[in-house]
Length: 183
Image 1 (tube, rainbow, N blue to C red):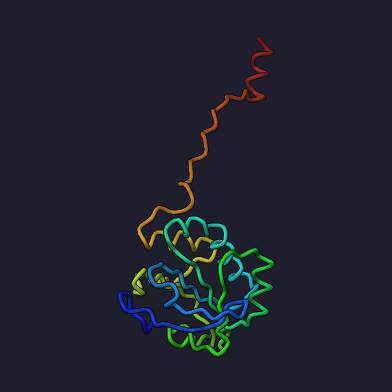
Image 2 (tube, rainbow, N blue to C red):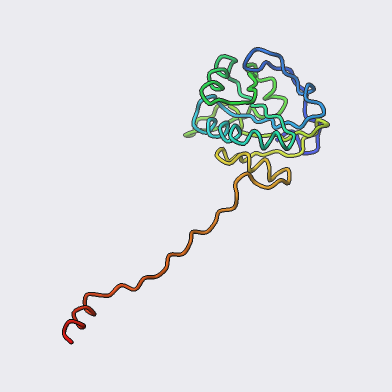
């Protein structure tokens, strides 16, 4: 990652799903979860977005605004938001300017073939615009827990309770039954 923790988050201007201009500086005085994901309506990206959707109120209570970023266009973002009922904005970085500033447009490899694509990375930005945390190994199904642990808050899920132990019941073996019948 080109941007280290503790550095100033680069400002940007990009359109959201509705074509409205969004700047990081618009969130001055607020904390931001800026997450980069490869593509709308793909399994991993949907799991990540839905995890953030399901825990959005928890993040808001902690003072965070969530912004998703991909290279998909506004129309694609609108469909994704409508289908998954996402309560947060998705930014359409079609020209990859935002990706370039944050170092998330990277060379990838699949089946030996190299190509350029989005690195799934989340930046946690404080009220002053400083990067407090960078999550590079995103667990799409538990991403909110990663974010909350990174900011020193308890996870969203309660600890798993161990299953109650079943009482051992003595079963009589057929041999014992026969032995009793002979008496």
